[in-house]
Image 1 (cartoon, rainbow, N blue to C red):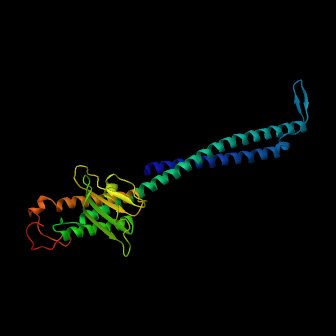
Image 2 (image 1 turned 30 degrees about the horizontal axis):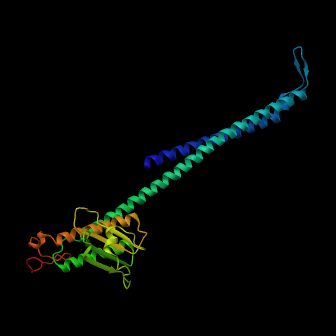
Image 3 (image 1 turned 90 degrees about the vertical axis):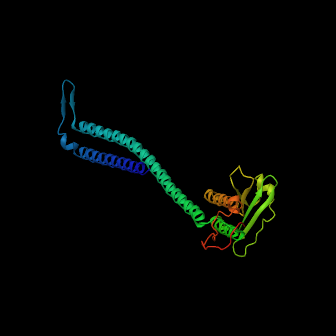
Length: 275
């Protein structure tokens, strides 16, 4: 895209040079015609004798030459205007293309910046959890961490996580977090509405996308105007929550294969066995 932009700049400069050259040639031609008209009486001295056609008086010859020069000047102005309009149209087209290309380039850089922000946010979600949850307290800490991330990303007053069985519509786990003293207003959202993706007034619902599980995680936020980037990040959080819930409740965890350490601090725990 940078090469395209440089090519457009070069083409733009070439057209501007041609316009300046055209203006210079036209102005020089007008000055030359002006001097020819002024000096015509000095060039024509006396009457002209034509073969077998009589004599052309000096005044008539001067008038004819001046008239011819004026016609030449008029034709030159027409040619100049035609060429000038053609180059102006091309210059206008190049200016529009240049503007569009700059906008596309700015959009590309903006998109790259947004993608980098997405990657950093997703990295912060995944890298912060260096240990899998081993107890209900650990899992609650995970819920709190992910909820706060969602609050910041969506810039809303509250967020609700709900993990349900989509067949029985039974709530398996629910957690909500608010910003400061904000109130949780949508506590009565039905599981059926979540499963069938029913529209919920003044809210956005992001659900996990895995289809081969007997559970499904959802994130409910009080905003209908989430950007595409916000939706991507919230979906990443929901997928992370669902994965950690499965690990926490897995047979692998119950058999005690995990080292008993705090999820965030890494502090060794003395507790043994399953939770």
